Amino acid sequence: MTHRRDFFKTTLAVSSLLGIAGTASAASSSKPIVVSTWDFGVAANQAAWEVIKTGGHALDAVEAGARIPEVDMKNHSVGRAGYPDRDGHVSLDASIMDERWRCGAVAALEHIAHPISVARRVMEKTPHVLLVGAGALQFAIEQGFQPEELLTPESEAAWKDWLKEARYAPVANSEMSTYGHAPGSVVPGDVHNHDTLGILALDAQGRLSGACTTSGMAWKLRGRVGDSPIIGAGLYVDGEIGAATSTGVGEEVIRNAGSFLVVELMRQGRTPQQACEEAVMRIVKRRPEAVKTLQVGFLALNTKGDVGAFAIQKGFVYAQCDAAKTDLVVPAKSVFG
Ligand code: SD4
Image 1 (cartoon, protein in one colour):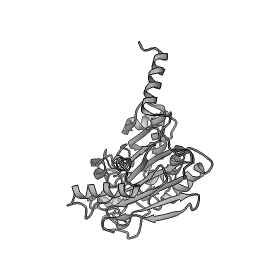
Image 2: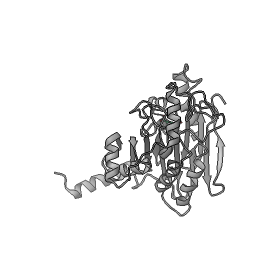
Image 3: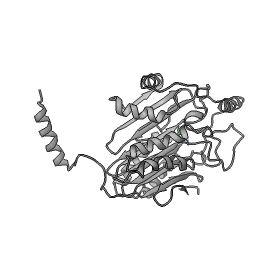
Image 4: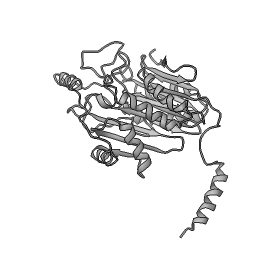
């Protein structure tokens, strides 16, 4: 049997060997910043900034930020008003991660409007990382979340319209997307009604965190899970290096462990911009036949507060918030841009 004292001695020895100082966060003087995917990220960033500007933790900031689009009734790709799956069920995916490799996620969660907060409870209250479906709902209810019907009359109407042809075509979710719209009803320039929110924050103490929340692909197969709740795919945070998140066709991101790849590339010395570009190009190289219609975008932030973003298709934008400006929207570069 290992005695407690021996355990601490061993832990201390290993820690000093590895140079671990108790926390993985960066130097204490850093440039606080919040970035998130798409222009609806502006409101999310501002909620996150309220936490950051008063010295709060980046983890609280990204959760507060993610909760904004989750209850935005105009947003049909995240949370409460998300479009349903092929069978009319609204099912939500979310993940959250902090600078100490703590993470939690839920997938295919129904009836709960704030999957990001359930993901945080998974992280903080269980020994697990990911809960799915009925088990995730049971856990959420046990934790005091109120179940409700998420399918709004508007979402139901859009779903019924889609059912007329019932054609599932996950084409590029750039500004010319069919996401969030019935086939044939593409709304050019409409970037409000689709896409995942991925939000990354660096707080005043140099702590990084990230959150990702989505209703996934509209009209997906029941039980389909995208990249957003998969740690390393839709979201990854390494407190010593940086953080990344993704938007677009989740299957392509999962196949390439996308957000983990972006962070690993930063570890190897790439800037956030170079890392996002290299990760996107890897997908392009592996799927040359699909990239004309496929959209994937990455957003990355390092511990210095440098930001990068890159997508396959043009139209991807991200929102940025810092002490100088809280409502910046920046068009990302892209392969076909
Ligand atoms: C998914 N990545 O479920 C999400 C959807 C998304 O832009 O980001 N759409 O695959």
